[in-house]
Length: 236
Length: 236
DNA sequence: CAGTGGTCTAGACCACGTG
DNA sequence: ACGTGGTCTAGACCACTGC
Image (cartoon, rainbow over all chains, first blue to last red; front, side, top):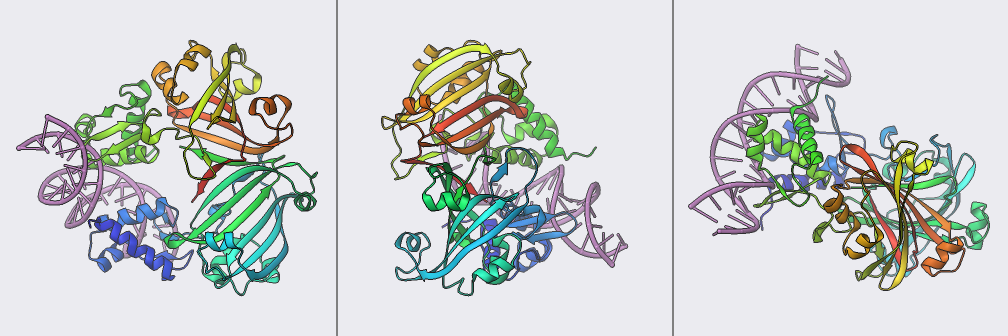
C-alpha cells in the first residue's frame, strides 16, 4: 500500500479537525510548526494544506495564518445557499421555524444518515423569506443522538446561518454536500406555506450534507419558489 | 503591477491553447521542455500546469504527458450534462434535431454573447431522449460568424457530444459554463415535444458557455423532464 | 520588526506507461 | 531502458499583517 507523505499528513490534519483540536474560525499551527511536529519538510505540509484549502476545509490568509473554515463568517456565509435573486440586490432574509420534533427516523432518512433502523432523529421545518416573500420551505432531518438539545426556541433565538449554530452548539461542521434537483408541482400544504397557487412549479432540492470523514449528518429537502430567484451553478 | 511568474506562464499557456497551438486531445510539451522555452524552472511550469489542470483545461496522465482537455473522450464525456438517472444505470441517449436556422440574433442573445446588435446567430433546437423517453428540449444559440457552416444535416450525421463536434469542426472548445435553474410549467409546444401533460413541472436550465479567455460562445436553454432523472450537484 | 503564507529554484528519487 | 509526471527536500527571497 503506497500513499504519498503529504496524503498521510493530510489525513492527520483531518483527524485533528474532526477531533476538534482546532475549532472553526481558529488558526491552525504554522507550516513550520506542523513540519517539525510531523518530521517532514515545510513543502510537504504545504501540499497537504493546499489540498484542504482547495476543498474549503481550511482558509489561508497571507501574513496571518491558516484558519479552520466556518459557516459563521461574512466572507463565506451561506456557502451552501445557491439561490440568487434574478436582479442583483442581495435580499434581506428571515427564517420562521414551523416545528422541531424528536421522532424515530423514517426508514429512508435512517438509511441516508447511516442510523440504526430504530434510531432517533430531529425533524425540523422552516420557511425562509427573502424581502418578506416566502421562498424556501425546508424539511430537515438530523441524527437525534448528536442534536438532542435542539429546540424550536433555540433556533428562533439564533440569528445567522443554521450551520453556524450547528458548529458552535453541537460541534458539527458541514463540509460538503450533494444535491439532487427536480421540478415538482406544489402540494396543498406547500402552496399554503409558500403563498403560491397549488400546482405551481417548485424547485425541489434534496441535499445530503457531510461532515469530516464523509460522514452524512443532514438530510435537507427544500422546495424553492423560483419566480424571482434562481439556483445558480457553475460547470467546469 | 505584480504578477507571480507562474501566473504569467499560465497566461502564456492559455494563449497557446486559445490560438490552437495544441489541439484538444493532443499532448502539450513536457514540463522540462516548457521550462526551457520560458526560461524558468520546471517547478514553476508545474504550478502553472497544476492550475490549468484543476480548471479542467488540461489533463495530466502520469507516465504519458499532459493533454488538452476535450469533450470527445470517454472519461470526460458529457462533462457538462448534470442530468442523472434516479436509479443507477446509465441510459442510452439519442438526439433528434428539430431545426437549425441562421437568423439575426435576438437582443437578449446578442447581449449575452457580446454580439453586434445586428449580428447573425445560429438557432438550433433538439430533443434528447434517454432510453427512448424524451427528456431534454434544448434551444441553443451560437454566434453566426463562427458557426456559419452548421446545418441540421451535419448535426444529424454526427454521433457523440455536440461540444466535440464544435471542437473538431469549428475550433471552439467549451471550457466553463454558468447555469441558472428554475422550475416552470410546460407550455403547449414543450409539452408536445417532451410528451408530457401541458402544465407539467419542468426544470428550466439557462446555460451560458465560455471558451478560452472567458469569451461567451453559447446560450443554451434546456427544459428537463425530471420524473425519472434529476440534476445532480455538489457543494463544497 | 518579527512572523506568516507565497513564490521560485535546483536536485534527487519514485511510479507509471511504452517500447 | 527511457521519458513522463509525482513526490520530497532545502533554502532563498518576497509580500502581507500586526505590534
